[in-house]
Image 1 (cartoon, rainbow, N blue to C red):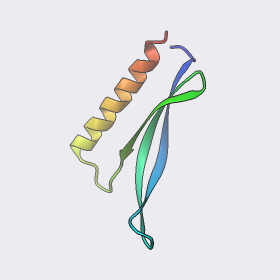
Image 2: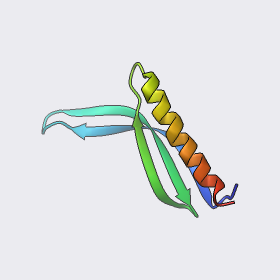
Image 3: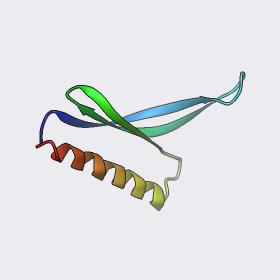
Image 4: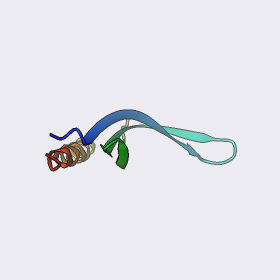
Length: 74
């Protein structure tokens, strides 16, 4: 694997203003791809209180694609 391409997982919340008085916050996981120190892609996946099988499958697919991306640089 090349050190030029890096994948990071980050626990992040997204904050969305519903209107002038209310805002919502959603927890999630960011999968960040960096090449030579520059972010080239960021995918955010929401994480609910009770994740479903479909949620798990989406996360697995995103992680697999990201880690395969790091291998192509070798």
